[in-house]
Amino acid sequence: MMLPGDTIVLDDMEVDVAIVGAGPVGLTIANYLGCLGISTLVLEQRDRLIDYPRGVGMDDECLRSFQAIGLGDAIAEHTTPGQKMRFLTMTGKTFALIDPKTREFGWPRRSSFIQPMVDAILYEGLQRFSSVRMVFGAEVSTFTEHSDHVELAVKTGDRSAAVRAKWLVGCDGGRSNVRKQLGIAFDGITDSTRWVVIDILDDPVGLPDSYLHCVPSRPYVSIALPHGMRRLEFMVFGEESEEELTSPQGVAQLLARALPHPERANVLRSRVYTHNARLARSFGKGRVLIAGDAAHLMPVWQGQGYNSGIRDATNLSWKLAMVVRGEAAPDILKSYESERRTHAKAMIDLSVTAGRIFAPTNKLIAWLRDRVALALNAIPPVKRYFVQMRFKPMPRFTQGIVLSDAAGKPEGNATGRLFPQPDVLTRDGKRSRLDDVIGLRFAVLSWGSDPQLHMSDAVRRYWSHVGAHMIAVIPSTQLSNFRGTILPGTTVVGDLQDALHEWFAQQDADGSIVVIRPDRFVAAIVSPQVLDEASRRVANIIGGQATLQIDNLELGTRSDVTTSKRIATV
Image (tube, rainbow, N blue to C red):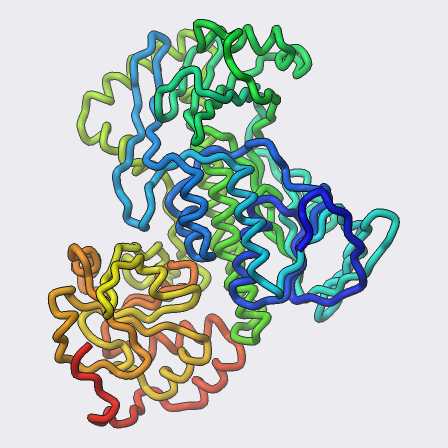
């Protein structure tokens, strides 16, 4: 693999997936596909990765995605976990606090990070895969879709190459050429706003966490970053120019609002960013898809732009892999848009609303906000609502690869939601995150017994064909002496701290077996005796060659579970 800044000549080639753009979304998709053995080509127009910070907030869903591609712990070394966010009135009082303590998905709900360091880990992660190739200085001039592939005309230096890819993914930012060539509208939801971003080394403030100073004269944000860095962001007014604001004098004047001695600050860089709220009308056409900023842009108030892009990557990657391998029909990719676009819009709407509340430039409106917010903050349920981030729209799929009733309502409260990720105990006594036990694949997970016991031969073969992992969760007290029947191919784990016991107990008798997708969303929750039918319905949604096999076999027909197949103890 080439190093950033090197030159390279690209020859004509064929790949399963071509990715345009080596930002965090493109790199994450490439790592997912590399983990799944899919031949992948990443084309980046620049000659190196972007070296300046952009995103600074990472949530638990994002870290869970990085864990799935084997990079979670390496990336966590460049985060500050458990970061609080305080919103301050004009007089410096906290009128809202975000401080969630939950680790429901295995990671802190909020962390700060430095994006170039994380991007570098994502880039270096590609070196693990012989199936993934990365090319810098590569400009995609045009692409043409055919019945079974997309042909790209790629320029590298003074040479041209033709690349044939079964699928193309545009991760090339808000000005996406891929989106423009597709003719997809990029609708604006609100007027753009500009902010001066100043990154400082040797943190001159020192306080942990994030502070949003909601001062009408110049709203600004102060964010503690890992490795002793501090980010300050100041709203830009009217016709103020970047040259004026980022000049030494302009930077000093801005820093004087936050620092007693701005001249002593070790300023690393200053830039003006434009924050837009935009959403593509569709997330692709035919064999060409878009993701990340190419599909949606949102203001920074909730720190969800970066995280939303990684959600795109997580949702799309496993579906692409299944289609390439023939395990799913191409129509499965339609669920990428139906599942992701609605949630992206909800995040945009939340960010726009937050900006209007927290950064008004009218003193009277700000005064009224402060009075109302301080009063509401004195009400414990309201305070908990903000502190625990209950206002954050959590993804809930009502269509796509989930089981729904005739009215389109998910069957079961957990269906379409993210499955939790507690630590579990393995047979050898090792404590492990649940996702690490499952791997990057489907799972059929059952409480208290082996899910295979409730499957016909046809269903068992189907799940084996798509690589699903069978998981039996039992109380950890029984792990060394379990007397139930466990068939070969099922992994038994102990439920530490009763986390999964409690989760199943809260499902209102919807079922004790869940079908978990590779992105950890629940496709179905059922009782054991209807697992066959639920599996068949999920398989029909996914499509692919194995679906024909399951349709042609009689469900409910089981081989005898002989004593030789049983494992009486773990």
